[in-house]
Image 1 (cartoon, rainbow, N blue to C red):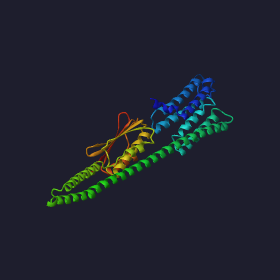
Image 2 (image 1 turned 90 degrees about the horizontal axis):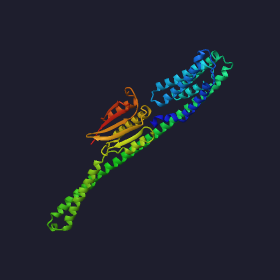
Image 3 (image 1 turned 120 degrees about the vertical axis):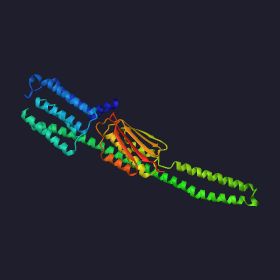
Length: 378
């Protein structure tokens, strides 16, 4: 529960609460100067209710898991209420509500639409100042409020841009670290396979030749009862059996261990919290399989963080008979049918190219369940 309330104590949100209270002091404690749009009897309670509604919409947007369109709609509702308040009564502090709204818009729109929205909002304010307020200096009042709007927008814009750049840099660094771990594991796996082959082909071959020569010596009547020859033959048998056992053990562990690469990939994600479970026998056979698993996990992490607003994600890599299974699920709170965008489509294509399959579905709670399978290559 506390995690869901954490956005409420964001420093920029606290600044918005203080501004809302400061505006409220004028709305609550002074008689409104009507513009004639509303009857005097209902003007003050309407202004108080509208002021409270702006805060409710702001909190509603911070607490819920909303799509971009819904978040924009909540901010538009705040702006419309603020404009109605400006049109209904001459409160000098009420236009500050639009500063709060424009700071939110800076997080929701690209630069060009944001600039057009800024111009449109302030054009409406100017019209209200000239028409309903009949202000003697509407331009000065407008410049003061517009400059504060612009300052809030730029501050919010650069904060969001810096956060996105930081996340992109962390993700890129994690990708590089994971790829480096993957390549290092590939080198270790190749070296292990090379050593097992050399032990089998070179040492095994020479020991077999040694055994044959010792057997020939043992058949010589002059050495039939010679104890050192029998001992050498026994040692050669034991050494050849030991080498074959070592080679067999090395081949049993053929494959690439992805733990270090997956841990590095998940490191920059403060949310969702990653729970990793890798079975000892779930080792992929080659670099192509390892790349497919790594990119699938990367895409699932990105989707859970950006779109699902998940707190936890569980990643399980296990072996099911003749297949390697990658099972990923999160506790996100999404809604609606899942759409295969570029990320999921690329994941499916990468898996199918190496004989794998992908199944993706949304569970009843809104989280995403992803199951990828790969063939075990002998």
